[in-house]
Length: 259
Image (cartoon, rainbow, N blue to C red):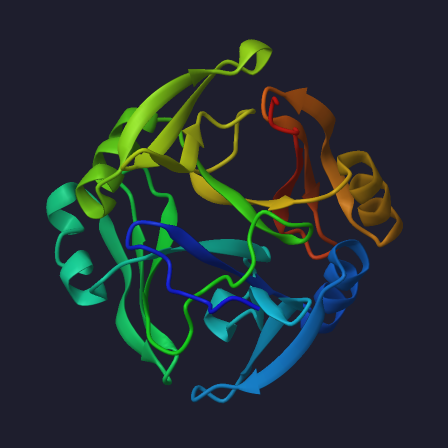
């Protein structure tokens, strides 16, 4: 197996789930993604569950903290940065908010949680012994993350100042305009207006799957809810699902590249 290397600063690199029922979540995601799990104690007294695909770290899970009681289960996105403290120092000047100041996560790395000017929360990760996702763009692994916000321009300006992203608008046909955030020449994340009223600004995670329709069927059989039925977009076939505890995520079967 090739040596695992850290993600470049400015790259979305990790996702984890805060859930009201970790045991049920493990069963659900294991059924649809084939994950295995490793349970690790934390220095806060709880447990952090590492989800793996073929032995490689794909995502994390943890019980919802007591201070979040009453909030829905949710997925969080992390972006690798070279220096968490220096990045957080730029947040308020760029129009954002610091939701959780920098903290050390044992010997794994250093993190913080910030909000963009529209209120969408995103986590920052300075890797030490944990680089983030060790597998991407495969079935059951992270392939994309997108900011759903009513003010894409304001969010894009903020992330440009924080991560060096540039925004590029893409025509998605009937789905309307979609913004790609580029790091250099590589598209690393996206942004769009929420697809319906009442959805607060947030970052949505999207997993690669081999067969979108089969994954949706498996998710429904495992107790999940299909929020958006499978539909075609220029880069593949996508759907949106909520797990049995209400955490929402996307799945996509990526289109084969043109020969």
